[in-house]
Length: 127
Image (cartoon, rainbow, N blue to C red; front, side, top):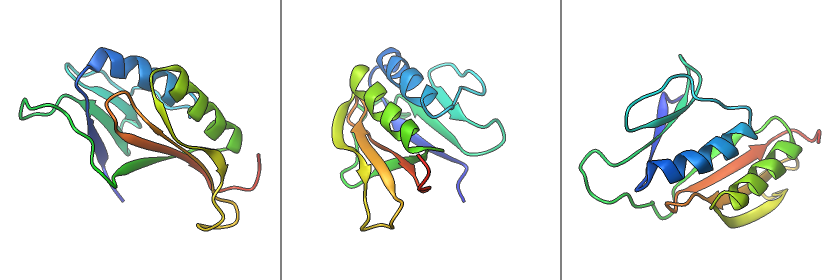
């Protein structure tokens, strides 16, 4: 459905520490390296880019905007949330069921150190 999502950062080294820990919990790695960018995802599939804004202005987060990342298990959602908090992120919604979406919707919400809102979600009822 999409090629990539880009989030802004004001401190790429701080972002790299955060995203390295958080993305590892979901089994995501950097398929290639770029100068002044952090990239996660599949070489030919969907990717997440973290970059300083191209216009040179400060990175800001969008109110009502978040990126939801698929997790294969509820344990991965839990690990994602814990890694985010341990690496400079903040809590926006502890891991748990959100049955108002559907019966097996298990998610957690965090903000990265730049204030971007992220979610990990598992749609399976298996742990």
